[in-house]
Image (cartoon, one colour):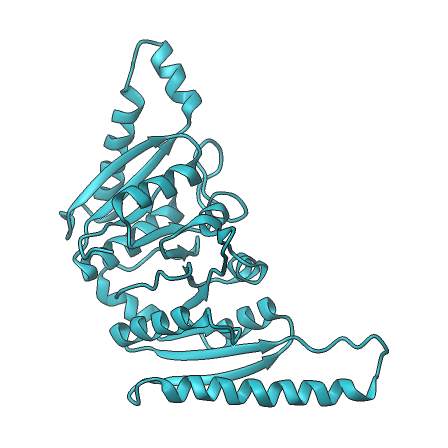
Length: 301
């Protein structure tokens, strides 16, 4: 991916998408990358406008509204980076992915929830479908987060980064991405593995406790190996937990005030990038930033 690749931020003119726009601008400023602000119009509205003899008026209005939204978001300060307004028509997730692909976006920044009605972004629909099919990293911002006033403010929010790992070969990108972000913002990285307890067919089976102990010992050894292999100056904390993975990840993020969770979006050779049920559930309940990483596309801070 080239150094000039865009940061892409889809907006729906809601307050949650305003917060996402502030994050996108701060990150684009740090990366010295162009920012593309995307609005996706409903095709039925465009058809209605065309039938009324105002061909192209909806797209022009969307660009004007996008510029007004950006100027209002940043108190009429000029953008710190080159900013382009894109307008598409169609299904929002399809168009977001298309624009990301065509612009060579190195990062998509979008809110987990947005407006209701005709224009809307919310997990379970558009955001989820983008995460399931993206080939670029996606930073999902929580709806209550107003976003940073300046790039340096991100370091105040992201003091700890949580990276859940499943001990598979696919975990490497997520750990490396978390470490790279941590180096920029000076954060501590919590490397966590959650063990789901063995559910024996016979309650109270004598071997169940031994199996759980053995699994924990192996996980702790592997997590420590991961931490030991990282640069000596890195601030890391390996953790092994028991319970439901999504619940434990969300609970840990809250208790340790992790401002960012970095999660891999696993893939299969046939289906491409796919978001797992654990990632979806974490996104549904967490109140912090979540960076979803598709296979082979680590972020470059």
